[in-house]
Length: 146
Image (cartoon, rainbow, N blue to C red; front, side, top):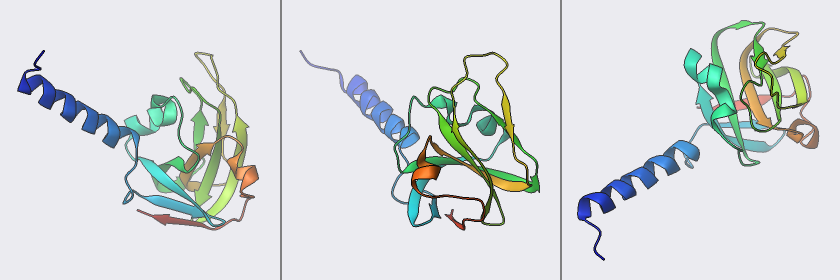
């Protein structure tokens, strides 16, 4: 059975798109905290920020999503449509200012929100429990390489 070239080409393109969308490449943005490096997915637009990590079933241990804001403020996050628990790390001027650990998945249409107690200009979401495992605390330095 021969597969027409156009179908085979389309499958190759689709596979490449899926790989690119789901896995940051080695040149992708990175965050380093306490010697631990995370490859980052970026959420810059309001639509990307609203969806966040909810578009994934899971992420690898060395991955995270960085939310970048135009100004420091008291930002709120929710777990709407999330499929796995996370740690939410609020950052201001390259320092951790607040952390919500082991934030559970919510099945509610109106999930609770998690609002920083200090102004933040970036937020890093990582897998649940890693902030404790890597001893990430308020005051920890964060090195972002975009």
